[in-house]
Image 1 (tube, rainbow, N blue to C red):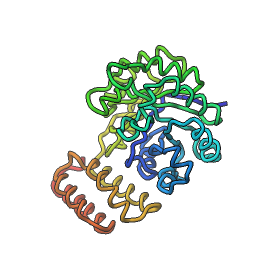
Image 2 (spheres, helix red, strand yellow):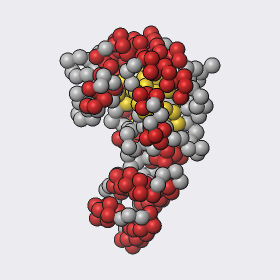
Image 3 (tube, rainbow, N blue to C red):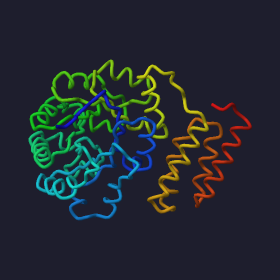
Image 4 (cartoon, rainbow, N blue to C red):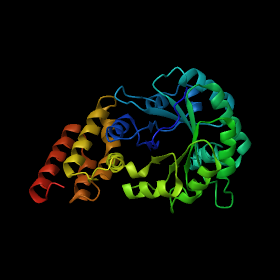
Length: 326
């Protein structure tokens, strides 16, 4: 029997170019209950695209990583799920994206474009549920724009199709990631459905988490941009839930975590690729620390991991000599 949802899980959202195995491990170590791969195209999977298989890489260190896929052809979806995903025992869940606002994906009738065709979305959901014994969730938005808000009817159609739970990003496709997420709409969806509803949008702190739960009564919370450079948010929320004192990460915590993420990445990616990809992560991690802009710029000019580790040691020494350990 499927164990769909227990104890309001705190999830890491799939983020293109961000939530690779190394970052997912870091988030799990800080308390994330579930993580998901970057979004994977079923069309690319069908043709064994090499880059797609790299996105699907899952480390043995990961305990609760699942896969997120997207597409719009039920026949391809069924074939890929049965042949490529079902044999993977390491993925317990399949998340299907019907909320991605990216222009290229939208233009292809995928992602949030499916919100404009509830019948097609329901057909895909039924195909997913009928193709696997894994837990199936679907992520979507409020609608394509504010003139076509249809998330309740959309959610009901997915529930009728048999999906196990839904994740609502409380913005329209037109909003992209701007403005504020409307948590009241998550509450309305929660009240309208009998399956679990996970809240997504604008969780950047413990206070945000508290307000989201109070406002929506959601069955879980998915954190996206709030985890970028701040995987510690999962630990802070868990500490709050356990009644412990909430502590901000020290600069030692931050620099140690950067080093660990580099080390993890280097175990399964080429050094050149790791250095390029980690530049943005370093910028997010050290944002707000003294002299962050200067050290970020210097990191961006380095070409080897040894040089970067030396610079991070130099930065630590600078902080030790000039600031309290906080």
